[in-house]
Image (cartoon, rainbow, N blue to C red; front, side, top):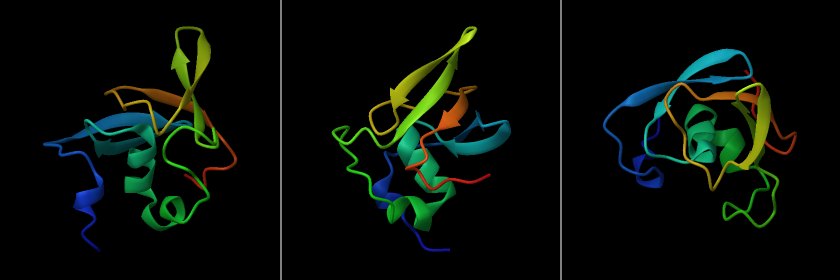
Length: 95
């Protein structure tokens, strides 16, 4: 496996989040999009995403009480226990 540690914000541990019904361990202190990249390095790295929030292609929906809140994944940080309930079709992520 290739070492891509320079693209991630420094982290000490992996935290557990849920993505569309499946549990994953991802690096703390990073954006949701970086965490998706951590899980699917090649697919996310090659996707047509701007990484700065301008294109809005990296939108995900995070459970917020009884509703889902849309966030831009390159600008929102991951939180332990986060539940991502939907991912934009522009993000090539499959469980």
